[in-house]
Figure 1 (tube, one colour):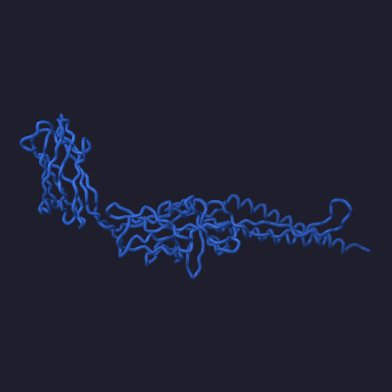
Figure 2 (figure 1 turned 135 degrees about the horizontal axis):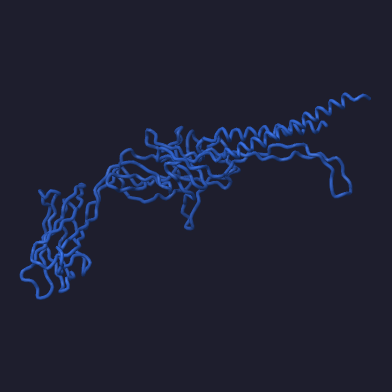
Length: 417
């Protein structure tokens, strides 16, 4: 009878702890990045009543205890968020944040920029990652599509400049195509070329037939001119020629590079029937042009793609990766020390943080990152409420063991000798 009393008490205590865990899960059901806990029970050692030569031993259990509370590992729902710096992990992994001399790990990606333009959590912890080191003195020095993740020990805070410029790339090549026709009239075509000072200038070619024409095919004189956009300033003028065969295909052409306010621009008319041709046309002959290079651009803002690259966008339509957010992994995620429901710390049980690698040994994320979303708590309200009912019934059952044991003891004490 006494044992039933104490077994009921420890059962009530164990289920009370489990109730506390479920209640905490439900209380944090709207906490971003919250990782719920679940209780694991274990029986207490048994009391041996007697032994015999039979293969069984008579014993009575001593009740139950909470063996551990383990982290729930399922994916939380991905919720829409207001900022493009709000991030959600789809798959395995943890963001690393640094502050107060320690590194913590979290699934809560509610990030933003502080006054120094560092990417930080809501309470000012620095988000860790790899900088591209592809800008200097406020100017992009190398356009990158993605940033390679450095080793775990080399991760750092992500400090992004407030102002950043994408440098101008002056035009160095202008290509032309189309049909000159065969009539002896002036044909002209212009290309938009970018100067070293990021100005939109014009490279114009004027075609006139050479007199006399060859016995077969055709020949044209070319005058090339570079000017500013409205034609008021002339930077260079060069002369050349183009020779076509009897079917209109380009045999050869000559045209020196033209100076575009400090940068030479080569002219390419193609060859054969690829580029400029000269043959009979039932419609008005047309010519078209294209040129490489682009104007400089000022920083418009940053975005984060699914590979966790921080992309700087510029007013000239160009973009470049400048940093990458790290995604940490552990041999045993459930071994992490819980600081609170959404933040954890490495431990001897979790092992050191690692990065996943591809077949070539390059560090990779191992998951997708969603910008403009946040991961909700990985707790199910339906499951939590069901567990509350079960635990309540279990608590009541254990309390019944206590009251029953108490009644039996009272009856035993009241028995007359």
